Image: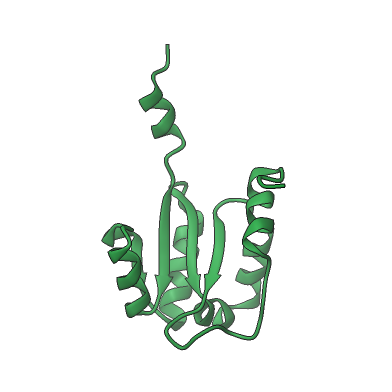
Length: 118
């Protein structure tokens, strides 16, 4: 018999954040572990995002819009095709970017394969 703990461990994915320092601090204050927040910008952010996308442990990847807009187009296309992890672009300390992507509802539907809320 498989216990509830074993099931939880099997589906235990972490939230990771790649953004500017103040945004990462905000997520740490909200309860995201320090080892899951990565203050980085530019090439360092892109490298960390690629690393987190390859990790089986990453379930949700929160990325600043600035990092998302500055990354290579091939990586953006790869992210668009992924169902897991769910990648969410958020405004950083400078505010929201003009470019808009999929809504959170659409990303969850893509990741789960069905509409969660109707």
